[in-house]
Image 1: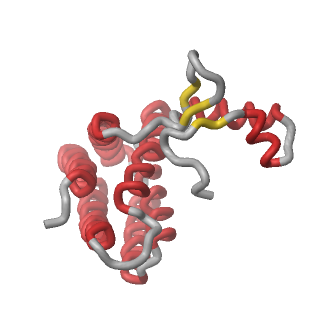
Image 2 (image 1 turned 30 degrees about the vertical axis):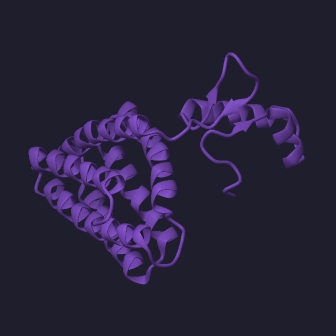
Amino acid sequence: TQVYRPGDRIFETSLAEQLGVSRTPVREALASLVFLGFLERSDSRKGYIIPPLTPSDMQTVFSTRSLLEGEAARLGALNAATEDIAYLTELNRLEMQAFDEGNREEYARVNEKYHVHIARISQNAYLERCIKQLLLRSSLYNFFLLGFYTLGSGANHHKRLELDRASCEEHRITIEAIADRDETAAAERMRTHIRSTYDHLVNPVP
């Protein structure tokens, strides 16, 4: 894990040799990653490239997330079943527990489940698919800008704690709006949450 970084080039033949498998399953897996937006295929050079992280790309990713996830939350307020709200509430409890315990891997896992489930209860398959792609891309900015799995102190560590604490609360109040069937509040609270995440990434710790 963590062998490749944004900007690195991956070659089908060498990857198949490293994994000890034939090129066919590797080719199919790489094609899936291209579809998800995790890899790009270059016309001018051989191989695949992991798209580099740039300020303009990050802004585009998070602004698009804000639009799409805001709409997903709005639709979720219309479509969520009682068990969906109960599940989201339980995820919020689990992420707060993971935060309190300092379990970052569990926190990341539950956080992704929260966003994916809201996308799912929108009952719009295209919206859900696009949001999943954006979550994959935005997670790279979390990992590389905040050193998500890096323990210790320092600016990134405190920035990560500040973001996680705020995120738990933003998730909670968004769930409340969905439970209240308040479309407008659900959309705005989700958009505010995504903007807050972006702001924590780009603004330095005082």
